[in-house]
Image (cartoon, rainbow, N blue to C red; front, side, top):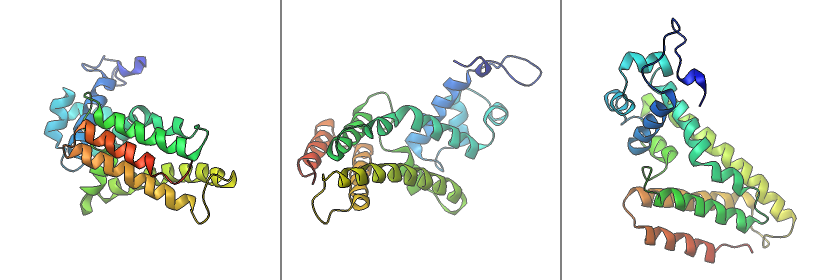
Length: 204
């Protein structure tokens, strides 16, 4: 843990809370409720800090969400980066689907997808949050499109199948998995969804 997480930059006094633990708690609140529905009262209660301490350590609610989103991508979505190293497009898809499945069947975290929940629930005032979530998702999609274009050049795709369209299909599956997980689907049902998706996957 970074020693700066324990030390205040204000007057050199030690903080009364751990920044990493507080951020992890904030992530769980955002993940469970979405951005707009996560109240400051619920955030500070979960983080074990006061509102002034939150502002001093993390900035406003939007800045806190950005930091929580960074943590979510770094820790919870790490499987997406490793999936790109798989030897075939189908293997990439399998790693992504199984990684998404593991998140939804874990008992340690909220269900659903932080990005989907927050973007779908954003009103006009939170449009910058939705834009940021969409931008990050587009970046992830672009990386997978590039990997699938390499697979197409290697002859893995049947004629007429475009990498970008297949990536949109894959993301629709992953988002559907998260939505069903968040709405109470059982582990067996989610596993069946992944296995069925892999059975009908159009590449070898």
